[in-house]
Length: 625
Image 1 (tube, rainbow, N blue to C red):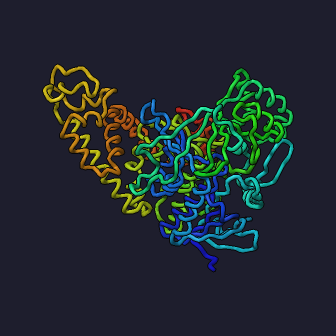
Image 2: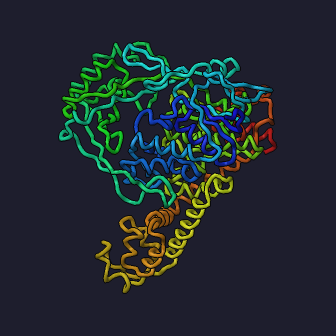
Image 3: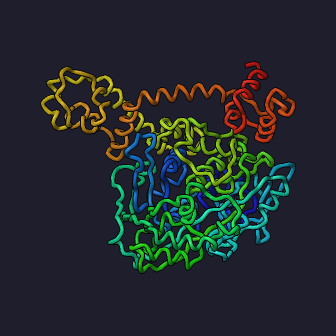
């Protein structure tokens, strides 16, 4: 048994698992402390990964050498690419997962990562020396020392669950809350507050009338989360189902509002705007007579179903009565009611972009303790925190991602620059450069950086470079190949276009909305032969990547020009240059916020709410710019 580590990670949720794996794989002796080793990467709410913008984050985690994409593909029981009717900047992968298989896969990863160890216990506090964290104390009375610590406690810090007027202490149902950490850090000057989230009822599928629901099948094409060719979906795929609430259901819920912790004053903390409870929906959208709900299986073989869209903290009786007024659920039995949970979080403006705290050196925060919601947002933070915790141990340069490099970069910059006034959830609209941050090319954006760092494997790097080489060959061919009328007109009916009046470049045909590279390859032999040379496991993915570059070339170039202009401000350093309290030429609000957040660069300063363009101009003048 050892008691000295390079990195200690507190909490084995989605942030903690990524943080611990990253630190260990980079070479740090790492300890992962968790209350329950049988619930590694527990999917506390919906057993699904990805979705709008969240799917892009998972692709980025995978491109960087993280594990969430690999684990999700191996545990997936349904995969869909959302927003396919829109442009590729909006395409977002999502997978329904087998909850138990997901945890099993993650535990296998953790237990087989060299240099990564586990300890089952509850962390109660930290040890400090000269303004830096030096270790962790636990409920069992053990003290572990470390050069860096990553806190990823999720909803466990003073967690309190609500079901009607019933209150139960805990971080998840049947799991105790963690005490001591918030109190110690608050005493040191950390700003903390409370947030609220919730989870829906779980149903017994044997008591659901699926004939009164609309089936929703998944997709079975080449798309997946991991860029590794060797990773595949292996489980039996299952459909989801759509049902709807009705006025009767709403009347029952409305009558129970006086017993709702959200409306009777029992819960005072901040709740999620973009994933509201069913009682919030009927109040906020009082004119709507129906809300869509999704019946989603919790596993490949289980009868347990998750009722997506019916998050609630109402009394059990009200939840049960409302459900039984939905035709498909007339005879439903439930495994567990929905509940709300309150927990502590820390103001994320107290962090640097590495996710190291400003108040204490070598202490990192990641996940819901930073005011975010969602497995994907947590995992992305955990990966960056784990990387930087390792780099602090070895004296390496900080690893950060820009807003034009990754959604993870947008996420972290939003947190540390703007803070949060509600649980933060990623959307594509939060990113200025969506066309640069597509899900299809996260490997092109990030894998080389991760490979140089030592996190991405040789296999992953070679897969990326091979794909890029083949993609570029297709792009060059399409741009330069000339199509003759005699060559294509006899077969235009096969691709659904009018006969050509004159020859043109193949690129001009690919730019037509109704045509694809794949359809054109069926009648242009050299293109077919070029595509046929690609590894079958990567062929469709590579062709799609090439087609996106061709069809959206103008948009991509325009957005890159804008990003490069903004990058000039990212290169102008601010931190340590001024005592903001003495700059009377800027507003009082600007002085206060600049002093509190202490931005790294002029660009970051410009994104702080309340900092005006004139304030930025004053700073540039003072910098001699």
